[in-house]
Image 1 (cartoon, helix red, strand yellow):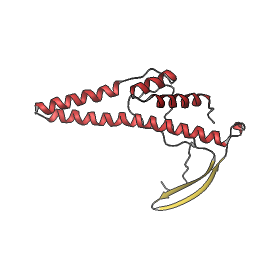
Image 2 (cartoon, one colour):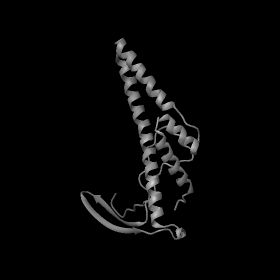
Image 3 (spheres, helix red, strand yellow):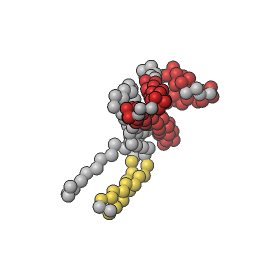
Image 4 (cartoon, rainbow, N blue to C red):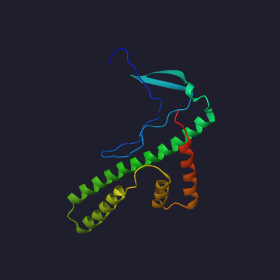
Amino acid sequence: SPGLQRITWDMRYAPATEFMGMRIRGARMDGPLVVPGDYDVRITVDGESQSRSFRISKDDRLADVSSTDLEAQFALASRIHARLNEATSSVVLIRAIRDQVEDRLGRTGDAGIAEAGSALRSGLTDIESETAPKGLNEDIVRFISVKKNEPEWLLQWRLKAYRRWTTMVEP
């Protein structure tokens, strides 16, 4: 609408994909906080753009935290957030595929197609319903690694990253 408009930003990257019925205890869907530094914003209205530069300063309460630490924390948070978004986006995709299979099954009279579709639907439901215990700890990291059939070196790398993450302080 015409007139003065106000835009606010929580200094976070975009949130992860959410879906109906999602329950992730102890986790936030928000994107990671940006690191202190210089940023640009561009706003386009009716094909006309305007740009401005601004600076996000380090929180004074983090005097003992180096810029390198903040960047490392951001890098780790970004990787975790990307994996969370990958997982939640996969659930959305699985549900869309399942809905399409259901639709095709309702319209087919072919027994072979119905059998194949039912097997596919069952597999999609099984994937989505597999659950891990609540929370995040080393046992959960191990559980996920086993489910993904990951090599030992990758499990050790994930455990090392988890242990480091547990010592970090959110700015």
